[in-house]
Length: 318
Image (cartoon, rainbow, N blue to C red):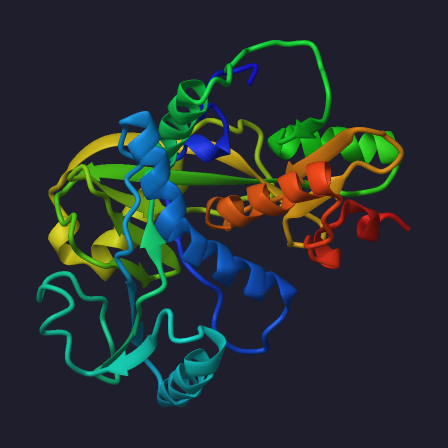
């Protein structure tokens, strides 16, 4: 890692491990579901080996339902979830949050009903990266800023890697989307994450609360904060007024890798023997990470075929 562990978009502050809606099932949604379930074992094991906290926790998520037609849709998705989520998590529609969230930790709902799913989880991205690196070292691995390529080479090189791939293949493979996020000193560490005002509000295990993020296709400085971060904070205050007055710890900005297919890119690098790709995760990369690692290693060492076809970079080449 040339810039150090967690230096890129993986080292952000938000860490919303949130699923796609349980409907119109496809390979990407099925893969994400399996990975989110796998994470329940994966991250605690990383913490055990490393002795460091990743901030992982199955906290669930709350969303307000503001229109009657959305309420009908939420009920339909609840029925789908009973089958698609295999009884391992629920997508519930409820008008009673008594045992779910404090009175001031609830997004507004015009209908008086909320969606509460039990699949969503949280993680502290930077802490998780550091815990993972420490676990690798504890198992005999080495973290380097520069090293000679040996054996199988996996390119997990973020948005700059997507640009380099596009140039080498003379084909648009993907690009970057800038995101800005804010971390507050506000302790609700046992509360569910909130999705409201088109943003994620995550109560982290360390007593902080993260707000994010923007999605900017056009930007000049990948790592600067501007007025869009201010707007983000105001939207968070509108969603949860209890946050107003909380001490601001930091503002973060970075660029997330977005593949043209909007799905992660996994598998062999075309025309480069022994080279593999793990990229394009965009907003769901951390949630996809445990299973992505498993199937990629299976592909490299055991000729596995469990990577979904739509994740293969060859599908993006004309």
